[in-house]
Image (cartoon, rainbow, N blue to C red; front, side):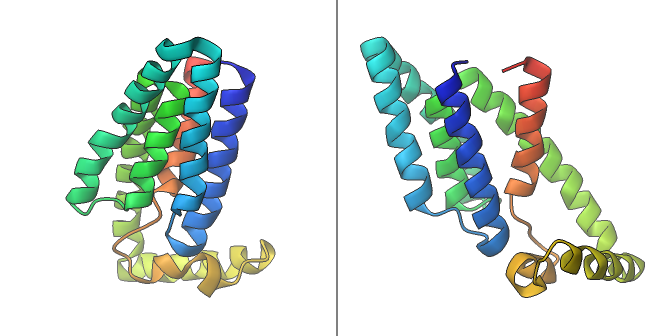
Length: 171
């Protein structure tokens, strides 16, 4: 993969991670410019073939996660994020990223089940009490999602999935 797409995806993932942890929202004003930039880049670099590849990648990232969103499994921002990533990377990479993100999300879900039991709540609150101030985080700002115990920012699974895909497949 060329340097520009890698930098674009890394930038998009970092911004999405921060906004998702803070507010559990990945805004359109973040995903849309990256989506459009991917189409421009691939069209300029490879003409209509590049535009077609970007469209297929975007669809591969968008459509499966749209189904997951309709089942109330993830937010709409995550769907659009994967569409933008797919436009940059193409079908194969976005599907690999999706696969690993869903695996990591399952593992995080299991951990949340354990943590939200009585013993786990005591351990988790102790860990948060130590980590939050050390990282300069204010609990209401960064960890408001943890209060419900029912959902978590999908970017907690997407970030390690991206590292996995980049390291295993040398992208």
